[in-house]
Amino acid sequence: MEKLREVLEKHLNKEMHQMILSGAKNSDGPSKVKIRPILLSDRLMYQASATVGKKEIHKNYEKEAVINYIEEMLKGHFKQMQVTGSRQDASVLVSKKGKMTIKEKKHPENSCKKTLEHNRKKQYILEEGIVVPFLVDLGVMTKEGKIVHARYDKFRQINRFLEFIEDILPQLDKGRKLTILDFGCGKSYLTFAMYYYLCELKKYDVQIVGLDLKEDVIAHCESLARTYGYEGLHFCQGDIASYEGVDQVDMVVTLHACDTATDYALAKAVEWGAKVILSVPCCQHELNGQIANEMPQPVLSYGILKERMAALVTDAVRAELLKEQGYQVQILEFIDMEHTPKNLLIRAVKDGKKQMSPQLERCIKELHVHPTLAELLKKQEEQVEENSN
Image (cartoon, rainbow, N blue to C red):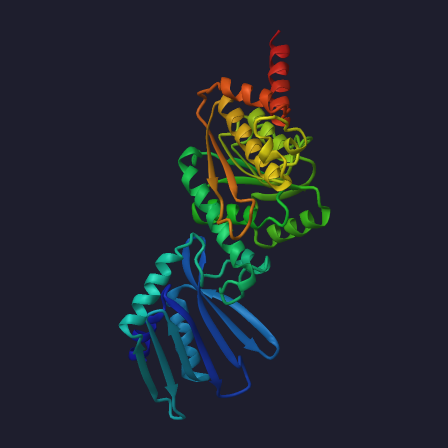
């Protein structure tokens, strides 16, 4: 058993893909057990999935506890164990008399090198092979921690979004509870990822509210949040323009809120004085119906080019308006164009330094457009002046 423990100590790590205990000696107990590494609250654990009849029973163990469990299973119940990993594999065969034959096999050096290179290319915040429960329930990941092929773009998008949040962590006060609003959260892939990252991995005290118009989607997401025990994550049905559920907000997220819904979300963020804004605009139709100027007419005469130009102008105007409200603004690529045409993210961090832009006013006038965000911010300023008098 001493040799077995040495093998288990060596192979139970993040590089292990899975361990399978099989060849049950009798029908009293599980017919097979699969063990894989998982990450829970930033701790490496091991999930044992025991097949008992038609049921699968899951239990999580720390390393020492899972070693004791495996030893017990091989001593009295199973005849063999197979381990596969990135660098090495192992097998254990148990004879009728209880003698154990242990074999280990290292992968060829070139194979390891390729694996390491592959891992370097795909270094994600949420790692492949580490089971994340909400990704499983949302159909992005299998129970074994593999990414569903058809959902790989979504997996990349989630990780890319978390990278943007990682960049702004210094702007968020870890010494108090933070309030984050996600307008137009939809199925909430990114909302769950944001909560998991900030609360479970980075240990921030957060309250996140996801808001959407679809009642069935909100009910499903709220149910999942309660299942996972995410006490600081809630979902509400409602409209961006009229939402009044909180008085103070630290970060506003708006992902693919359609057309002027993005403008209402940005205006709300400014009104609350949100420290951080992350916005991925969508379906920028408003200016497409307004834009008119003789100079770029060769471009505007082609529908698809006019649509793209109007979308770019819309987001540029939004960025400049946020600068005028005291935000440092960047427009960044969200994910590659090959995956979605809606790939720009507006990231704004409040620094209080208002950057007025005379060129912006001229641009709006020359293109004969009336951006909703400009109108909303103007109304806010007029309300402030009225209240101060």
